[in-house]
Image 1 (cartoon, one colour):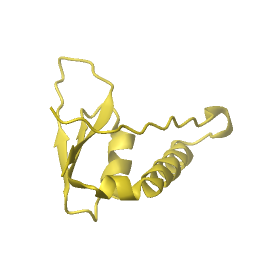
Image 2 (cartoon, one colour):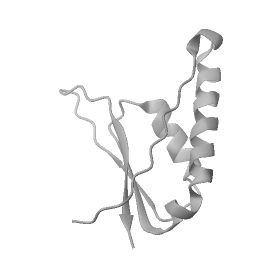
Image 3 (cartoon, helix red, strand yellow):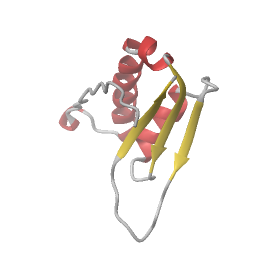
Length: 96
């Protein structure tokens, strides 16, 4: 089993100040982009990046796909079972 250091950032967007879904998406994208940029060296230390999601978080999946679109070492996996309710999204990184 390979163990990697995990970095977590909680993003809080106060929806009472945002009245449109587009504004919420922009705020989330800005915060996620900042996190990725702040940790770029760590992220780039992996040969392969795997973004896994279950379509429960379409906005997050779209943001991650956009931010990693230019990275050739990113694999996307979609796992969606309509019979189960799963609302989690996580990223799995594989170390060199």
